[in-house]
Amino acid sequence: MGRIVLKGITKSFGNAEVIHGIDLEIGEGELVVFVGPSGCGKSTLLRLIAGLDRPTSGRIEIDGEDVTRVSAADRGLAMVFQSYALYPHMTVRQNLSFGLENTRMPKSEIASRIDEAGRMLEIGDLMERRPTQLSGGQRQRVAIGRAIVRNPTAFLLDEPLSNLDAELRGTMRAELAQLHERLATTMIYVTHDQVEAMTLADRIVVLRKGMVEQVDTPLGLYNQPQNLFVAGFIGSPNMNFFRIRATGGSAELPGGLKVPVPCDGEVTIGIRPQNLKLAVDDAPALEGEIRLVEALGAETVIHADAVDGTPMVTVLSGQPALGAGQRIRLTFDELPHLFGTDGMRLNPH
Image (tube, rainbow, N blue to C red):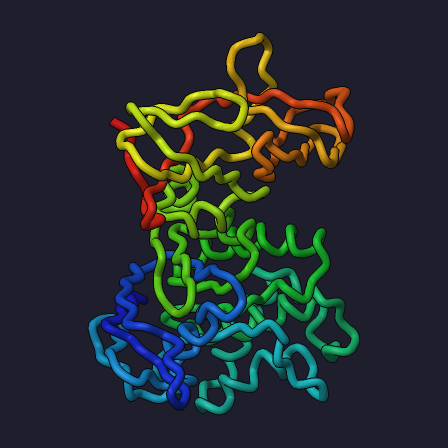
């Protein structure tokens, strides 16, 4: 159980429409991530699914039942917030049991569920502590445990790791992935962090300005972005873009390197920084001047300006002896991404 379907969902606040006719189907047991820039509508969409807000129009179904006008408490969903939302005056055990006690569940069943969540999340020895006595990671485990004990139809997680430091965020991300595998329950996860999206998701929903730009697997988005926005949003560092006029079936990058193009006219050529490498001969190359070198040890990130002034970034393995002010000549190891004047993907012949 846990199939969620959105049909023509819109949401307006006054005269401002923030969600524009979204259609989406989330399969049973799937972990779907909503990702996009701030203000794109991802948290609003999650709140609509949760029942915390109601759509202006459209229909929300859970396991085939129309829940559009059903209250949040009766949807069978559990939400985990960025702020943990724990009761500070209660112990961990009391925080976990509070919602279950309100449903008049037998005490033995409550105790069994809490013990299971404690084992699963490794918080069994924290049961008599209060939230102020816990670290950020421990508080987040308790917040997740409070959702688990409800045995929900689906979990809704709204940027649950954003308050944690980078190292702990990485650890908790791995734990969430393992937890989803063990529970096999539908999860919808909101984040602005594309690393979380890429590593956790079965599918990613990329949102912009209240609309869905693309829905695909993480690697599907990375390898086949359907428009310029998705291409520039997914991947780090950001994809390099060169606007060029193509003639005779090819376009020439700054410096003379030619790229086959399936049409004539203005196109945008996208090349991921990881696909650029140093040219080793005098053949035509993508040329520019280095502006900044970030030496990270195992790899080096080069920021440069192409000969036509277009900024570009490349990620090179190892520690090449390069510095600011030097000329750089680059080529690529796979065909670039191509986009038309409408921003949509062009497929090569």
